[in-house]
Image (cartoon, rainbow, N blue to C red; front, side, top):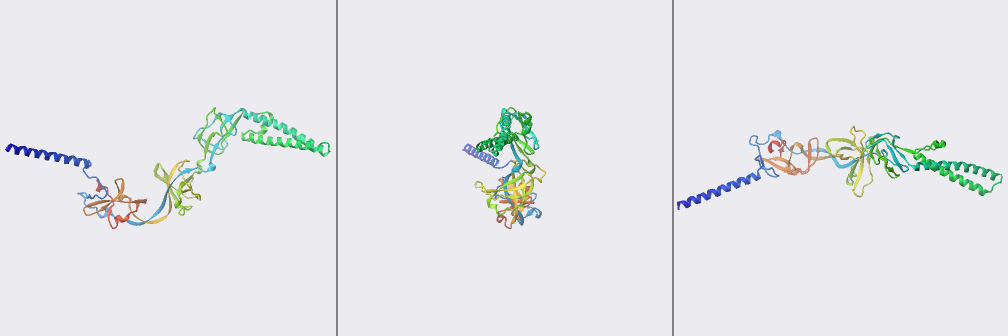
Length: 376
């Protein structure tokens, strides 16, 4: 009988030990490595044992203040249409010489490429032939006119001579324009100096952003040899939703930064406002100059911006009082035995203060100004 009691007591001890072991494992799963429980919204954080409640210098409350009202928008950097150009051949030709590559800067009139083709020689031959016929029909028309005055030639012959003369006169003028488009001077052909190679020149000064051919290619009329952009007068073009159309005015301040770099911001002012609303995006564009900035903003770069449209009365709190809990901004409200994390709905920030959109949650409450020690 005594042995049965001893066995029963041993089983009770064993079950108790297993229960303690499970309890320890459970606590190990739910407690972080630093031994503190996870901070959650609405869960009280006890004051640090060595510090107690925060002093008056570490307490703050919501403040009413004026903040600049801003409209958030995005856009791109664009060159003015007059500062963009494409170079295409006026007539098809083989690329015999290519003087530049993408990224090179060129000056207006500089030769970018040289082309050659039998068609250039044929055009010059046709021009010289038409010019010769024109001289002949000019003399014939003059002669027939003189005969008509003396009534030695019928009116019909005069009209025929006039028609032939005017026809070849039009042909010669047309081919002269074509030669000029090829940068061939018709006067140079009088001595029989025909040209087999033409030069393509830069229509504007700027940077080659794309070269679409290589040496030996057959470049047809519709093929683009290169793109040229002069970025000295780039503009900022922003897309603004139509609901803000009555709030945007010329002269308003724009603060912007690159999408990939929020550490540096720049300013400009609204210069031009579109009166057209895109039916797909429900937005209109706003343009602003960039040439006053020392930093270059390349054509096509995407921008994030804020347009200042006035001031508004808001309730705000210091930025340093906010902590991130569960990936959301919180304030640590001071209670009798600890701090209570309260979720904050924030708006724009300005000069170290943040607009609070749900101030009723902290009505009359004090919160910790420097909360870091209470989360350690």
